Amino acid sequence: MTGRKLRSLGFIPAGEIVAGVRGGRLRHEGREPLPSTGGLYAFVLNDQAVNDKVVYIGVAVDFRHRIMNGHCLALPASKPRHVQKNLHGALRRGGRVRVMIATPRPKSWKGIEVNTALGAEPALIAQAQPPWNVVGIEREEAVEIWSEATREARKGRRRAAERSRGAACPRSRKQGRMSNHEHAELAGG
Image (cartoon, rainbow, N blue to C red; front, side):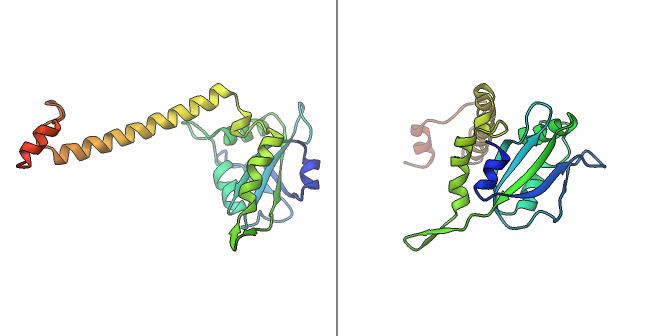
């Protein structure tokens, strides 16, 4: 999908992301600052390899906050987010990254206001297949990201369960878990 196609869908240009001067943070340049309103946004890349290609589509409650604090931060020494890493890489290679935004009007369904941007985002991603969106990355990388997040969540749940068992159960961890029968005896049953 191209920036031209996004314009036909109602997106408007909202400046460019450019390399920052201090600390590696990227900055926005445009006629006006990014608005604090929300809706859909897209990054459109122009470099030696591609021209006017939509590389990322997202949805935000506040464009300025999401783009500047979510994607334009300096690359940390630890693991950067993939969109952040791609933005920095594209600019290092001399590419230009334009920002385009759209603010679809909410619709209503049976008297309930519906955020159309949230519904439009997955449809646009499915149609455009932007390479920086999760659906655009290699399947193995997506599985790795998901697996790592799942492992971390499981570790957190396991630690919380161990802490709660340790506080409620008089047995030490080395002795192992108490059986239901032992719990009943302890409780006087």
